[in-house]
Image 1 (tube, rainbow, N blue to C red):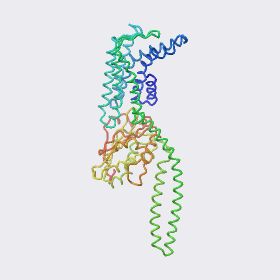
Image 2: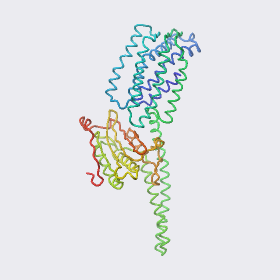
Image 3: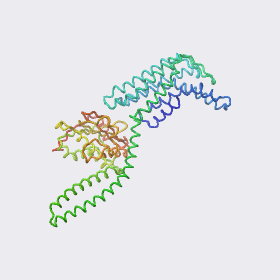
Image 4: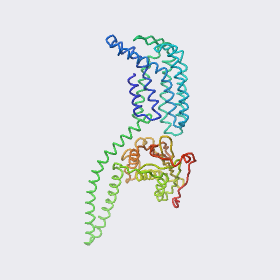
Length: 484
């Protein structure tokens, strides 16, 4: 049991983010009690300790006592921090205030245990309800993270970690309330309890299995996202080689078609106009289609090589808006631009413009035919302590939930148009990965619209001024006929 918990905890810590690092530690430290029990009740009795060197036996014994102290005096605080830092809508200032306020309590409990008793003897009545208070606060923070997220996708993501409060409540009832006295002697074990802890292995192994299932199927604590990004990057690199071969083959066929087109002109000049015109129409139509396909695939599938420089955010976004003017006019769609953050962004401006243009075209394609003048696309910028973001929001048809996990895959598309090859979003994802960032879909509601966000590392963004970050967002509507 402790090996499964430690393995899962280390896996989460290896793929850690700021919000899940405490949850990884919770799982890791949660295995400390299982380790102590396994050593005293199973492992050491099985292999025997008489033949061991004294130093090794002492080291193993001390590690079990430390494990139980960690379990009773450190784990409740770490669990509490896991729920606290999962709250994306809470400011970092309040998170640090809560962390600083809650930290001393566990230190006081541990100090009281070490000063007034023996470190290997645990009288649960002295601290169980204080630990229970921390566990209750942690459960409150987990619930707050779930209910405070108004985003449908975000709420679904916060639903899965609610598994941990349930497991922690069970652990509290079995190992805190269920225990009255525990003494870890020199490979001797004295426990007075109601025996509820015997079922812990079912809860632990079940929890590990559920977390692994979530991670593989739907993603868990952001881990699948990292795996998906690595897989997509690998797909793009593999695709480049295959497309090079495809590009060469199709161009050879195009040369043949051009030869036939030239022959058709010869037929025309030789007095066979009807036959020649039929051939020209068919051949040139196919030629145009193949050339468009080759160029589109080549441009989108080549490995992205960045040429980064500092670019003014307003100039970058405005240039994209101007280039989208004709398409907006044709579709009677309004473009809104909001600047929640201004400054200079270190990026490849050409690729970022193309990425934003792709997202705008996708947003316009997603507009309902009956939307008319009510259709809009909004570009807005924002920042926090970790990243700079550019979002593209629309009120189109949205993305079906069953397609959300595949939209960044090469050649995956839901569009019925034969000229769409499903490379736009995979290209955009590759561009953002090259910038050290990511592309995400924080919100998509079928029938209401989609928000796609570009995330840049904060180190790539230099704000214009401190004051500009505190001003309300500027919002203006771009008139397609008069962009100024």
